[in-house]
Image (tube, rainbow, N blue to C red):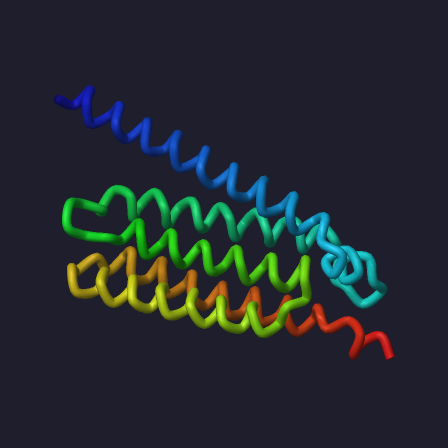
Length: 162
């Protein structure tokens, strides 16, 4: 029995790392080729590139930790992973719409959806007494709002250029 639990846990870790790294890679490739990201990334007022890259990978590592722990508590009848997936999809739409298309209205709508689904997930977790996961999701909401808010504001390079 212990072998089955251990192999499921190892399998869950491997799947979490694969899912997180593949989404990070795909989203990174899409974002890196974005015209508006390149304009901001190569501008004189942008922070050091190392800070951006390290922050990006720390954000995805945090997403991976949240995914792993949500996956462990996701049982039949609970849709934690679905809500987390919708939240992440809204985050991806936000990032792509800002960096690749400079579509601020779409970015605003997707960021609102992301925050709504994150709060919904935190409430569901709180009702089921998953306090550690609630704190992870609340920190994710704060990271999302701060990280994306700062990036969104700094992307308006046309205003800052003058």
